[in-house]
Length: 241
Image (tube, rainbow, N blue to C red; front, side):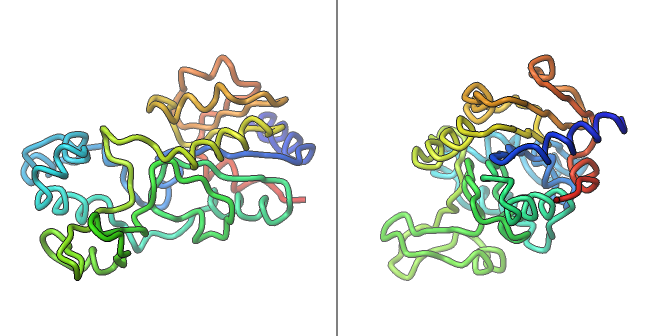
């Protein structure tokens, strides 16, 4: 494994247009649970699987139950950036990392200092009235009860992409543009099983592809380097030169 880390360090040193594409595994190291990992108390609290609750159909039909789950499982506002978030921000500040493409909605990359972040699935920190588009602060949602309402009477919806909703086209275009122009693509903390986000790997035309994930992914055989360790443990050992 030391040899793999040395190789990764060398490739980062030699690259000028790095793009990082990350998934839930980046956030779990900050204590944010993957909502797909149902805990032992889950079925005592919710009568539906998380994928159903986080669908647009469910949000429209049962917004009270949606927000009960959302406040309980999705708003982890006390979480702090981990070694992976911090190292990526350092690489960007040093001019080596062009951007972060993330499937996470927690805003931890920005909290760590990253500037160019493509949030494929939106962010819990942005919330808008569905009627008048007036923004609503995330703490108002976290500390409130029931379905949050705007002063105009409209229902407030988090700016997150629910199941059955399309990804934002401008965000996708920006992510594709950066991935296509990257000389090194590092993919970490994702099993590459959620589409269309996982399909972004197909736009990479650069020199080297690195996959870092605790468990193997379906794309490991396409990678120039695959490391089966937590992303924070790996990036935390990288030096920014």
